[in-house]
Image (cartoon, rainbow over all chains, first blue to last red; front, side, top):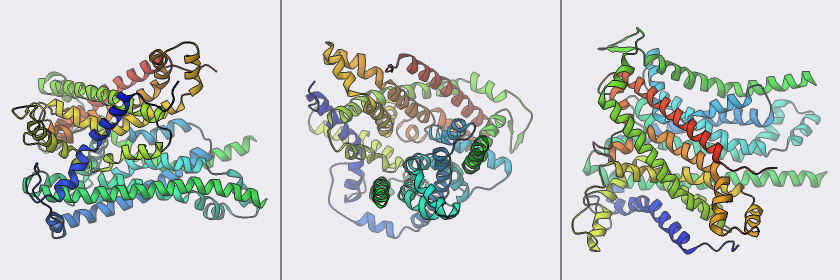
Length: 274
Length: 289
């Protein structure tokens, strides 16, 4: 068996597939810097006009502000909930473990419109009004499973004997958590915060249903897509968002790798000490 | 021993209590409420709380809802099939023919997915449109004389756009399943006289089935509930049930009917998903220990 030498057709297919994946994304910066109001080829010239336009759009600024608040709170809450669940299922065994964890992970496979519709029905029945907080409530629900997925590996890689050593040396449970456990899983926590922030920032369907008068960024973009004259600046906005998301993801990945490395290093260094 | 275990139990339950409580309040309760809600009726501005199957009768008798449900199901199944079939060779290529930098390639595959979903769908509109990128390119190269009109605002556009949007979700589970395959099994098949073709169908593919099933479900379930793609690129022939749900909750102001539509599509999708899962378990290969 010739391992590693792919058949020619497979390589060609892989390249074609990557072109397919990147086709829409490549257009984004192209039209963002294109000096024309119509989104079509041929390109006419280079301009940064659309980016400058973004600076003077107040509605956009408030949408960015709203989204930032929503994404920040969502990231904090879902990472906290995710850490609880990941810790519980990797460290402890308790009755109905699979069922409970499975239920918490359910939003991962539930269509977002179902989550959105059921939350709005509940809010209507309780007579609560829609606001950014209702969006946060929905986003926490869909972000927590992602946080659990990330943090599970961080907690599973944790060497339990380190915690036991800390207990033996007289630390309290809280002290052990703060001084031993938390530093070891910190990179995983940061990675989870970044991923949840990114997901919340881009989420549209739940935000569309649950948002009150304050629009989040995707809801704002949706409202702009109807006006052809606004499209070039939407492209510019999309370019900025893409750069931002990729940056955040790279950062998250870097932290995740550091987590793996740190746990490996710490285990070996403690061995060295012994 | 027994006492220690039960203390462990308690600590574990206390920890999981918070996220579980959140899921109960924000997911289980709302879902139960939607089901109840679907048995109520809209009475102008008020909700009539007498239990009735009126909404379900409407969903199952009025042609428009039937058409939308069937179309959603058909489009979702086609999207799923297209996405998974297109994704499989890529996952295979990554797992079997990439020696290093696998992580980098996986990252490159997920990058387009992190562009705003709305914008990705919209950009497909730009590519497929009458004056779009595709038509311009095909006209310039002389492959076609007239711009193609059947691509945008049709079910085809919805399939293509969704197949793009869900690509990473299909590639990743298949890739994970392929990575788990013990390579010595392939060598064994070869030593026993299987050619590459037979080896693939008799060893690799059956062992990859769990990944294929996971990919199928991950793509199928959410696509039934999508309403952005049908609205932006689907035209009138591409509208799906989620668009109708949104209309009932919005302009049409008949939330109970919307809830009934949502519950119906959820139940249908759940049944199909369970079916796919069971079939997958039946035909999937297992390595005897």
